[in-house]
Length: 155
Image 1: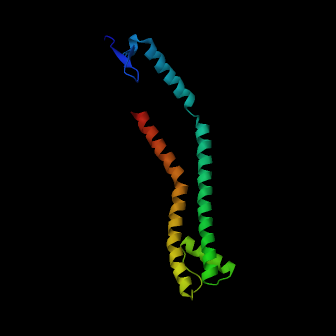
Image 2 (image 1 turned 135 degrees about the horizontal axis):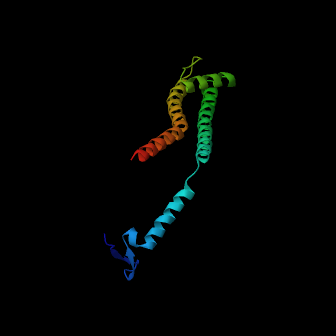
């Protein structure tokens, strides 16, 4: 098979130097492939590094999820305390029961408290879905990455 050459053009469309398109007869292309192989080896992370990164990422996402839940609980406690005139402890119990999906504990007497409870229940569902998505995202990403690596190794 004979080697073909092409003219490499610079951005201003002037002819510069011929470039080999067949690796067998072109030392510069061989050197470029060797450099790419070396770069791949240097950029590959060991299994320990990947495991450490996964644990660090998972813990950071878990902390973000916990922050979202605590923020949602704080909104509920403040809302129940102000709208239903519940004590701080009763407001915390009410907010945590709604946030966890268990349902209300104390009867709500005012219309403002009932309106807040309905809006907080909808908000709590979104907070739960958000928190689960945040926690599961590094796990799903890792699983997809492993499946992609296994598929590439089979090909």
